[in-house]
Image (tube, rainbow, N blue to C red):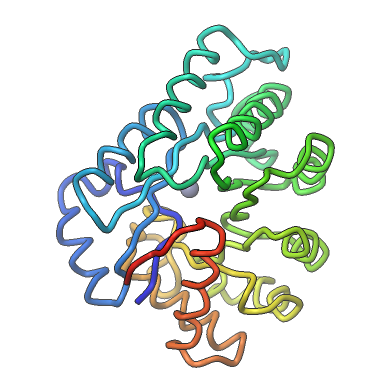
Length: 267
Ligand SMILES: [Zn+2]
C-alpha cells in the first residue's frame, strides 16, 4: 500500500475520469493521496476533494509561479495577498489539511519576479509555523537561495517534504540532516536521471514517493498524462536503487510520511 504524497487531482485533466483514476490507483496498491494546492483556488479545491474522498488529504499554499497573488514585484506583501494568507490560514485549520504547500522558489521558469517569490515563500513559512503544519517545498534551480531563506528565517518547526527532489548529494544531505524528507517522483525512472546516484548517499528513511500527476510521468508513460497508479513504477525503481523489496520500501515510506505528518496514514 502506497501513498502518493504529491499530486493535483483537482486539475481539468482529471475532470472526466477521476473515479476511474482512483480505482486504477487502488488496483496498483496506491491507496492514499495528498492533493497539493498551488494557489487559493486549487487549495480550496484540494480541501473539497478531501471532504468528498476519505482517501485524499489536502495541502494548501501558493506556488512560486503564483507569488504575485501574495506579493508585489518589490517583494512586499500586497493587501490582496494578506487576504489570501488569511484564507489559507482558515483552510489550514480544516482537519483534513495536513501541510502547507506547495511553496518555495522556482528560478527555472521564473514565472513571477524573484522578490515576490521570496516574500511569498517567507510569509508561508511563517504561516506553516503558526498553524503548526509541515511544509511541501517546490524548489527548482534555486536550492542555494532556498537553503539561505530557510536558514536565515529559521527552519519550519514541523519540517516537511522537498517535493520533486532534484538536488545533488550536498543538498540531499542538507535536507535529511535537518529532518526533511526527499519527495521522489517519476524522474528517478529516466535514463539520464542523477537521482539514483544521489539516493545512494541517503537512506530509505529519508524519502517519500510522489507522482506530481498530471505532470512528470515515469517511464514508459512519458509524454502522456501522469496518474497516481503509475506511482508503483517509481516505487519499483526506488526499491531497486536501495536494494529493498517493494513491500519493505512501501512500509518504510509509510513510516516516514507518518513521521512528518505526525499522524497515522491508514492503508
Ligand atoms: Zn506539484
